[in-house]
Image (cartoon, rainbow, N blue to C red; front, side):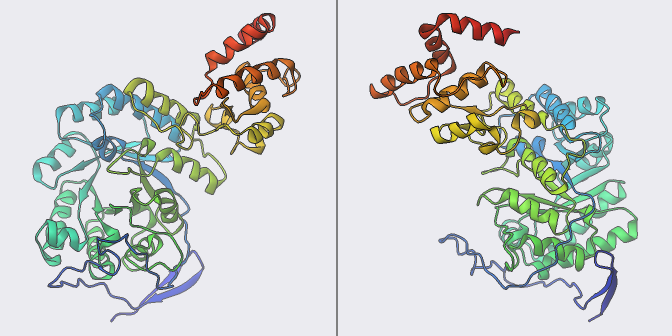
Length: 467
């Protein structure tokens, strides 16, 4: 076993490990039945081994809306793809925080969308593809002028033995041939390590990654790895055992297989509600890229929401780095108005009610100072002013806040919850709910109430809003 010694610039010390990756070509599949017995909720196992946090100097987002995301929707029209691509570029900014976006190129419609996005001449995101591993698809990548493509390389025994009916050695040899073809074609291969959170990490994942690194060194071209948490099994808790440890997966690919951070990417799914935390953990422990989709659309429970990671980036870096976060609201509106997509109303950052409060006690706080119950200045950052829904729980504070917000009243014009107009509206609303109403009071209904109660004041409010 060869001792490896290298200087770790992150801590300015020499580091060593004596692990030499070698493929373990087992006769029977390793299915981790202690975690995944299928008839129970998967167990999270701990070995209490921790790896160091090493967030790369540069981190970024990649997009799969037009590949994985589109698979879960009605087919996008070309104009939809082009318009969303422009909005995505605006969101990512000139520094390319949204670095790449991957497309299908199978059909003529797919290729037309790629061409029209190319014609925009935008620097970011870079257009990449996802293809089947055959010569005809590689030819298409070259014809489209793309420099990088994703290639599926399933790595768990569930896939190798059960789906592909191969041994690990056969699968690895097949994958290496495919990767060599990409390199021969001058295309950067991005290897999608499917189902990595159920794979034998030291028996297959790391040895395969090490073989890829050798190919990269020989060819002088980068080979990227996308760590695909296909069923959302990844967990980020300290001391979690492999293969489910997000930080363990990322750290090992760097530490044992010598992959630099800029060649490592995390792609997660949200089956267990962990998708955003797992993506952030991948950043923190050494992957430069996290793969996302707009609104989190994708297989089953979906991918990591791109807009969530844009906000997460700001949280980690303390800056937008040139991102235009107001594009998040425009993207959500485009999905709803132009593509008839229904966004669940409580979805963070993009749902209609994400910054809407109903409780009267919360509305009272909002009336005094938005900062008490609003996560940040949503009006400035996302073009989404905080709202109060008026219903049986809103109280006079909620009604007063709605009036001030709807009519955009300035500080010295705002009314409080003791205003006679507010008290009169509250009295009429109480009658509604005492009669059996269960739904919120709509904007038009509130306007009609104000008009019926005090038509002169209503006219003054409307004139003030029009100025």
